[in-house]
Image (cartoon, one colour):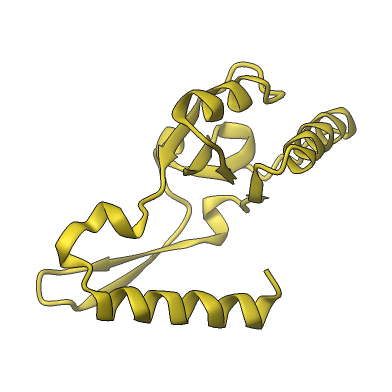
Length: 141
């Protein structure tokens, strides 16, 4: 099972306050533990929303770009991990070890092909497999 672990923004992250040396060391040790256990597929921090944009689509598919910053920091993402584990309980155990204080982390399971049922036809599965193989070949993942 794959899960996205979402680190929420706060006033500091939205103001571009960088982590301290101690925070970076703690996060590095935590990431190393995840990698050694073989559960970490990806993990990154994100720049503040002032450097981002949102693209809104209307019902006809027309798009509008809205530049950041965005007002509601508790709804924004400051970073993430993608973890592959055997169960919900396991991912929660890993996240509880994260070196955070006074923050909230969101954990969401990532869909698999089987979750889509019959709507995900053999042709669509074949296309998905082909695309994943191409991405892996391009990026060496």
